[in-house]
Every structure is written in structure tokens, then in C-alpha cells.
Image (cartoon, rainbow, N blue to C red; front, side, top):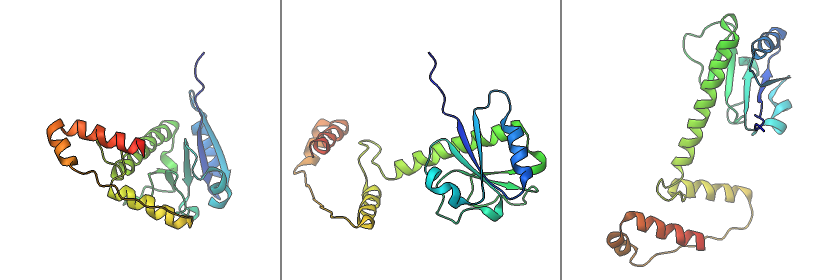
Length: 185
């Protein structure tokens, strides 16, 4: 039995009704597994869909969420082609050139870009060999815990003569040793 594919959720923020009609027509293309939801502003969607996987925000410039309030990939809907690409968005669509093929290309691009950005964020905070938080990752985790306001315990572990084990057994063995220590903690 085939595994059901989770539909792509498109959240539309636009006052003009033609955007909904146009996007409904484009999203209804054969093979499309898309749900288009329309809202008046970001507050309508933020609590329910603000961090949902497989969700893209489509918005006109006047309804764009404030910077930092929306973590979803965002596509801005424009009346005409911009001279310079809009900043702070994953992509843009222009009314007169919007077709089913253009929408699918845009959504593929946004999905790939979002996946790559997630990978970069994860790699920026982790040691690539062990997967353990590096200094930047540790500082981000610490900042989050402090912002939560709960209690916090912080320890420091110094592995005596670790360099000797790393030098004599090799870096891969040293990485495995670090992973074992972390697993036991």
C-alpha cells in the first residue's frame, strides 16, 4: 500500500480576490497535492501554522509579517516584475506571468532553498564529525534556556590526556570516544 503524501499547504495573505482565484487555478493542475488557505493577516495563521512543515506563506507586500515573526518560507505576490529581488523572502511571483508551471517551479525552489537553509543552520551549530553542539550551538542553546527563565545547571568536563588518545588512535577513534562520553552523560 503506498504511503500517503502530506499535501503542501499554501497560506495566502491578500486583500485582492484575484490572487485567490489565480492561485486556485494554478494549484489545481494535475498531480497537484496542494491546499490553499486564505487569511486576512498573519495573526490568523501564526498560532496554527507558524511552524508547520510542508507549509509556504504567499503574501502581498502590504500584508507581509513583520521581520522575525514568520519562520515559514515566504513568497511575495507582486503586480509587476521587480527591478531588484525583494529581500527577506524566499521567492516572488508576478501576477501576469503566474501559471501552474511557474507556481510549481517556485514551490520546488522554495522547498529546496528551505531545506538547504535548515541544513546550514544545523551545521553552523554542530561539529560536523560528532554532531555535538559546537561553541555557536552551545551559545544558542544556552541563550534559549536563559530566555525560558527556568533553572539551569552547567557543567564542565575536561578529558585528561584526550589529545594522546586522539593522536595514538586517530581522529575517528577520538570522535567515537567523545560520542561515547556524551552518550553516557
